[in-house]
Length: 299
Length: 251
Image (tube, rainbow over all chains, first blue to last red; front, side, top):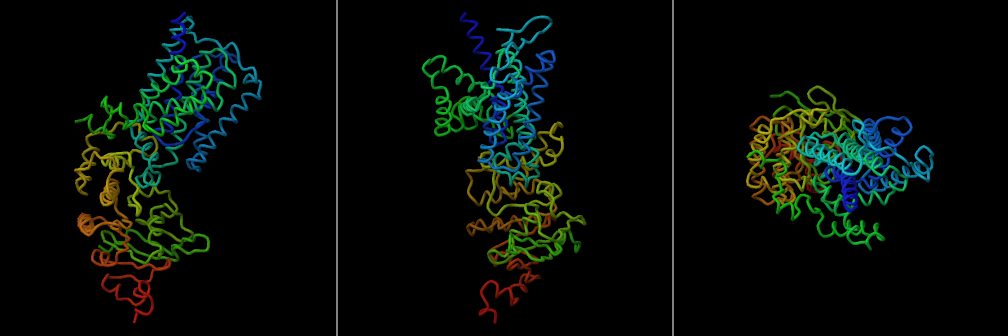
């Protein structure tokens, strides 16, 4: 029983780490505020649930489509974001979260107020993925996502993201099309959230609109901030701590939302780099503090 | 040597009722070191922002190598070979000096989907290092840009502009707020760039420095060109003295 409990927890940590990693790319790399990441998780979850249950598509195809649908909606939000500065973008993404949740609640196809129940488990060669085998799936996806994030960081996209995150005018003066990279940052972050949502749907097997409420966005944000917004491994560390602490200290369960908010406030005030972000103490101790151009790697 | 590389035709920029730039016609010759001076609010920075695409003109044309470029996005203009620095410096603060320059060196890789292509790390690193040495920042290569003093940041901005392999470089008050010795260093750097064949346009607040440095000058006042020519002639021009000191000194 203990094992099953741990595996469930581990799967959940992995699933949320994928969403937090997406947020790290949008917000940590490219500096685009997104306070509605849970909406993209929800879009992925609902897409995947509906495709497998109504259309009878296999999980694997639904999983990919869930990512693509989230990505497309992320593109749209990115296009909106072009015209907005940080604080307005924060409000817009919060509003977006509420609208998406409202739609889930209102329309029967998304399960309405009762939610969608009986979402099938993924099948592979006639074998149903549950428990440990599902956790393997989660961590495979997480590992691939991290690899992707690492590639992005090292590529010119990563450099363009960093530049627009720091100073949009400077970025433009260096030939970087700021609009394109803002949209791209939203799309990539949303796609990862969508994949995470698909996994979540088939992991929990029942989902309701409440699973993707604004408070969930804050939870994902607290993971991201705690781990270090510009860190890849940080998304996992953040997710693990945020998910594990209330399990260890039970009374925290009652005050989860306050707990997440407190994490964000404390981390931002005392160690804005998070646990593993650039310039953080642990990153320095572990010599993760790479020279940003990667000069150290080649010499 | 007299080939015109950049030209503005009746260029206007109005902000509401304020004519920041009004019917400005300037010609920039290839390889020249051109100064643009004028009192506060004369429209110098507005002119730069129009040429580099950060503002869209109300009216008029900007012709660069025979092509009209007015209204194009700044990134596109930068890629066409017109690089700039900012009067209020804009370093990527958390990144190192090296990375600031490297990002500019990668300018070919941001358009379309070219970022997926493989790239030669060594080649880009060498180029960034070379440019950093050229502006004399080699000892600060691995420092976060945000920790550098103003004089070094100005040189960093020049380095970033050079990394774009530009044909024209626009320097917006690169010497303001600097000490006398720092000004001398920047002047030497600008002269070095001039020798390399680059076309340089600089906006300068400090008239003696501008007179000393430029081969030709435009003087702006209230959004209009009031004088043009060799620096030593321009500063004797009556309307220029008026603009700077008031009518009573013009006699």
